[in-house]
Image: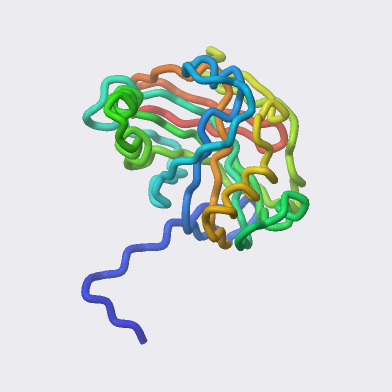
Length: 228
């Protein structure tokens, strides 16, 4: 029996729709600028170039329905995304086989301290201070592939206080889910429990305390989160 010098932290996990089981989370990969219109609004080139990824921490995922406005920031943005949960992994996974590794999908948000991210970009430093903070990835329950299949098209939409802010379609992803999995597996050994946030459509904008965000993805339901 392994003995630890301090109490072992809990394993981060997510609820699964229709099940009392939990999905344990190992790593969180996030793709940047994966919708052309968002790439343009962030000042990038929408042409298909090699994808890039950053990471959040597993315990940044949160299903409480509340997003605490973070410290040290006065410009926090919503970015709604589809979460991809893996049941297995490996290295050098072929695109044709990539979806065999997917357990399910969920509606999620990549909340961003945009001012701190901007400062880091300007200084050519890593982004984690703007991305990987406490409860920065609200998400809904995982919808198993057995129930929803592999969504590759359909409405992606986020509203704040019933005003639509982000609208897109899953088919507008520059890099599709199988391609993301295959590309990541060239650089990392993917494994069961890994999740991927698959990018956000255009319309990202600031939130304030008291705002109610509602994100929807066709076939995956909705996620309502209050900024507190």
